[in-house]
Image (cartoon, rainbow, N blue to C red; front, side, top):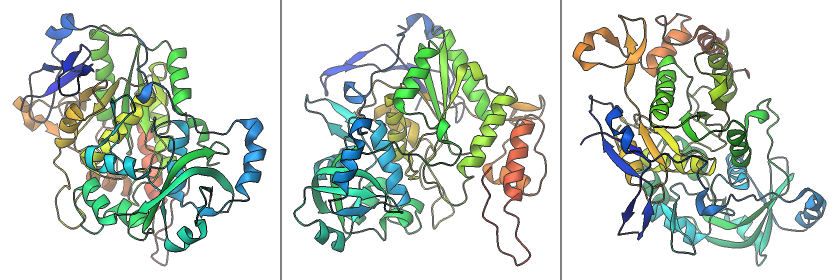
Length: 463
């Protein structure tokens, strides 16, 4: 199958009977890569301005400040549901409009559409993408306490009121079906499943959220947690006529930076005047062997300080969503959320949101399925998908470069496993693989995990 790059001119879909702003332009393909064909530039119709959010309007579920005292008094009189750490992250996601037009935890109709169609039908008959179930589980005892109440108070782990859930609906939690349809397997050992679903209650509760105060973590990183509204304001302040988003949950090496800077070059060639990069690390739940958020943010700061990325054309912000590791299903959620933040281009790489099979020595998902699914996903027609080109370390140039199969012997592929091994052993990678300041942060993180005298691994200290 020929690789493609997705750009702006529109065509009409007979099946959906509406105009779709997606065009497929063939490009010459290297194995495992995609390249831009400059001969197509003259055919493009460049649109300036930020993309509209799903549903045409960003959802804001926060209670107005003058009403917060009243809502706290109301919350004190209602049945309570305690939120886990990950539940609270989902409240954060919903409250700021990342999942627009959702107005709260999913009711059963929304849950079933998400599971079976990866999309939601709106009142006007149009569709928006929604591939990740955003649900809240309760157990039998909580269900009994709620009884006939139509409202409940959601509290954090310290019993502080966080939100009121209104017009609630309680329905069965089909765990096996949810797992099978979201991950494509029910194999034991899926990190998000083990953390949030296996021991969760047998019921789900949906409704409309009123979030009493903005969610804060007080971890020194809240200033990086820009909402979709704040990001759109920042892009407008910088006079962006295109926004391209790059999500990651790993440290940035120079191969990543090459992909981002090359994307900007391509957009300039397409006729855009000031494309802005949204470097958007995932900030919610991640599995235990991923580098913690505080260390990743420190490393990203060094990447900008060392000039690997241009601070003038880069916005660094934290995406508050938890990570599912659900491959092609989850990457649709990641792309959809960036539409709501104002991005009209999304960079997608090999095996996005994927992981190794929890029980077998293989990847859980086909490495190319993520980008293929994004090209066909319902509700993502307005988003332009930019597949990665493959970058590797060029031993002849002593830097990261796009892989050239005609001289494959000149390239070195440094896997994440190899990178972690070098950092743990305090060894330096080849010059040009990662900026020196960023590498020092990574070495320092792994050094913080050094076993103590009794052999136990220390928990990593915050960066």
